[in-house]
Length: 337
Ligand SMILES: *[C@@H]1O[C@H](CO)[C@@H](O)[C@H](O)[C@H]1NC(C)=O
Ligand SMILES: *[C@@H]1O[C@H](CO)[C@@H](O)[C@H](O)[C@H]1NC(C)=O
Image (cartoon, rainbow, N blue to C red; front, side, top):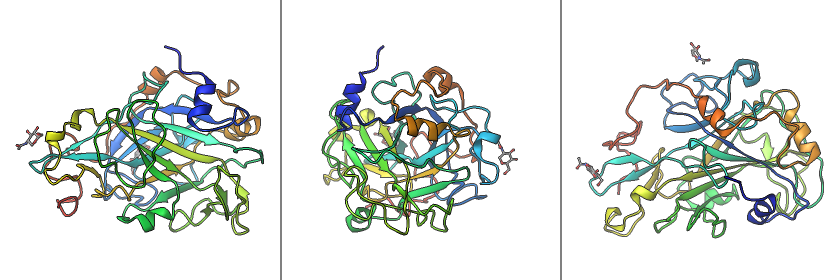
């Protein structure tokens, strides 16, 4: 099966043909209740995550032993990328009050992948080509798992959902969870800030060492603020939740509300968030950004099937699948009407 042409990607991403973007698939590594960024050393962490990337992912991840030194495989198709990328997982709430985890499905062009997500690193849109790739030990978080309001989530600018009518739908992004069944799934979109303070690999809230452009957006080539002058690539996750088993209207709440709930108990969708631990080997990412390549043949790659073979056992032993009385970690405290 041939993936659609680069021109098709350019159209999808509303890029001009001169703008390159590194777009690739990372299959599922594990689904587990761990968060080595926000809750290092804590097993279980407060809510369930789905994780892709290198198999060095663990309860704690020491910034002084970056993933390329400790991982032995990666689920990503760029074989030198041992980074970890993770988000919360989505649950469906049935009329009888039980919950079922919504699986992920591969994106367009990556049909052989075992779930996971699509990762983008974009050096620039329309000019200003120089971006500085992340350094060993770099990590960040975007979004607020506790947000339940449009006002809070608007601060992050670009954490959205696309209600997929088919695999090609890329319009109509919303900040809250789609209100109607989405025939080809719900895509959650997580775009990270694109300016860095140039000094700190992390910060207490895992966010204040990075910032959005001081005006405009990354896409309009807005300038970085003086506090965060270093332009970094735009890291972007697309996660496709395969809602097909849960789309029948007679399974949806009788009061007309929508039935999907993030694993932290958020049924509004405003709690969309993503985590990142950088783990590219050597200067592979910088080289790719400098050459403004799409397929980047100079990078070491592996097939989707090879990426599927990398996996990791769960650390936290609990039932996260099947029909559950409550979402793991929540004791039914949230996510109920
Ligand atoms: C994960 O961490 C535990 C202790 O926190 C350690 O015993 C184990 O070897 C680590 N696993 C991997 C794959 O690094
Ligand atoms: C709850 O509803 C789901 C979905 O309809 C069903 O599969 C499950 O068996 C039900 N569980 C109970 C305990 O009735």
